Length: 217
Ligand SMILES: Nc1ncnc2c1ncn2[C@@H]1O[C@H](COP(=O)(O)OP(=O)(O)OP(=O)(O)O)[C@@H](O)[C@H]1O
Image (cartoon, rainbow, N blue to C red; front, side):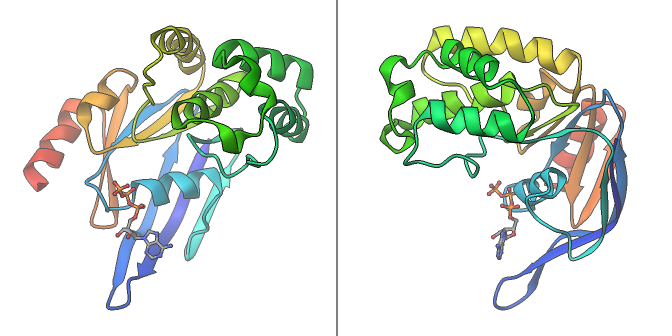
C-alpha cells in the first residue's frame, strides 16, 4: 500500500509557486494498476519521484507498506565510470538480492555483448535504456513506477523479450504509470486518475478519466 496523506508540493519558478499537489490524499492499493493522465509540465515526474522517495513533499506524509520500485528509466543509481556488471552486482546487494542471478538476468535481457563489461558512460542511449529496464525487471517489486510509458527501443528482439517479462511482472504486482497520452495507459492499467491543478481525480475506468482530461484541455 502506498498512501499520500495531505501532501503538498510546489516549486518556486522565480515569479510564482508552481503547485504540483495541494493537500492531496489518496492510496494506491496492492494490485492496483493505475494510469495517471496529466498534461506536460503539470507534475507527472514530480509525483512519480515522490512515490519512489526521490523527492520529498513540502508538507504531508507518504507511507509505504510495500516495496516500491525506482521509476522506470531512472539512471541516478548507476555510476557511469563503472561497468554494467559492477553496477548491477552492487545494486543487487543493496536490495539483498542474489548478485549472480541479477547479473545473469540482465546479461540475457540486455544482450549487449562485451559492452556489459565496459563503463556505462560508453553506452548508446538505446543500450542505457535497455540496461535500466532490465535492472528493473530483474527485481520483484510490489509496486512498479513508470514515467511516460514503456520505453520502446529499436531492438525488436529486446522489445519482445522485455514485453513478455513485463506482462508477467505487472500481472502479479501493482503499477502506476503517468503519461500525457491515454493510449499509453490503455495497455496496462485497470483504473485511472487525472492530475490537474494540484489535485488527483480518481476514476474506475480510463474512459471516465479521459472525459475529464479531454474536457479540461
Ligand atoms: N527542481 C525544480 N525547481 C523548479 N521548478 C521545477 C523543479 N522541478 C520541476 N519543476 C517545475 O514543476 C513543473 C512540473 O515538473 P514535472 O517535471 O514534474 O512535470 P511533468 O508533467 O513530468 O513535465 P513533462 O511532461 O514536461 O516531463 C514544471 O513546470 C517544472 O518546470
